[in-house]
Length: 112
Length: 115
Image (cartoon, rainbow over all chains, first blue to last red):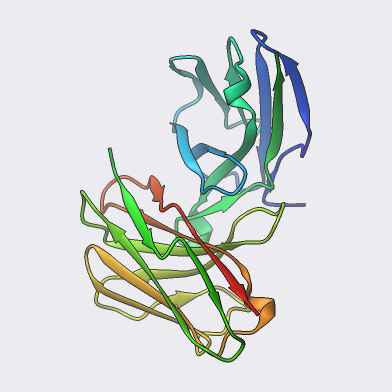
């Protein structure tokens, strides 16, 4: 089992729709979770961090965390073509000395 | 917000030469910096963790004599790829973390091509 798993996609959604990106992780003791956006040829850009169960909203983005199910998701409302990118889920693994472990990323394509 | 810079952004070198990449935190002091590499269409792979004033900690399988890391100050870490070979061609990205929060901020990356 991979430490952080994401569906590689591509996930295609029409402009204006809600994009839902999912991530599962193996370390039940993990406490910190992050979503990064990476455009082709660029480095990752932090979108959201979440530490507690439930939802956290920031603009068009909502991160959802369920530690019991070891599941974290990112919702993007009113998707725009500029949201087309690879979205990386990252988990701070305590047993790894608090290092981030990244999923392979989900490619999102928003079609106008 | 937290800004991390990297220099150079792109470098092409001949096989056998050494290349130095700088990573700087511009508006905060980074007690810890990380070095990643990323191959095309793959996720980030952590190479090493760099702490100011102490030796870097390398991930399993990463040759410390080939990838020299120096964390000279709270705002600067350098990665030197020694005796580079074509298989070292990759996208190298650094990140920096402040002492308290565990959020990492990434530099823009350095694309290394070894001919």
